[in-house]
Length: 244
View 1 (spheres, one colour):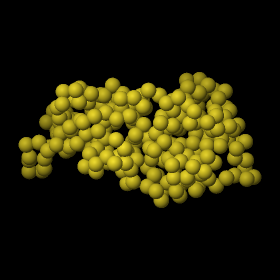
View 2: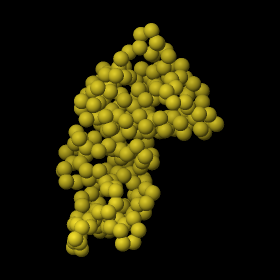
View 3: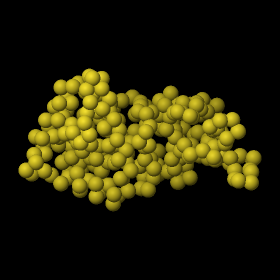
View 4: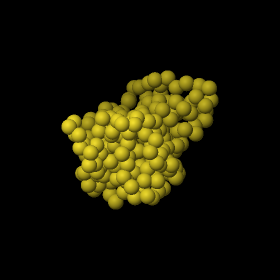
């Protein structure tokens, strides 16, 4: 199924790769699909789903105007398609609802049109050596010398805003920053905010958000990362992003 053609009244649910929910959502969505049963999620016994913050996202993950991957979600993750089913216990304040899980889809859907490449990049960043992080720092200065800095970053910001991709762009930036930070901590180091290595991965994240709209602009944004780590599109796509 094309993510952009997902029916508007359907939604998608992010879980752990195993199919279980995150944090306060203990439901096994994989089991729900196997058993063909609906789920009424409760934060605590007696508090139905309608009183909670909505734990779903409507429409295709990166369709125009749709929600994007939450900034705080854990990676890797699983992705499920569902519809909402009203229950019979309508109360004065409104109905309670159940989720009907229909099928699992590749997790890259939630990472945008370049979702496979985004998943590959996040996985690659998690495995960086400290020398590679320093290479990212040096490559930024090499690709973007201060005396002739390319305005690609600002052009990408404008394009993302115009095309309803700002939320996706910001989410990808947050996740690449987090992956870089985790890699540095493994080596007992810390990545400073607005450091050149951080900007290198942020430029690549912005490229991922708008590449299908402007390949030439994305190519410019990839410049610092490409000098340090090669072509992002050649990285292996992790199984959690492509598999079902």
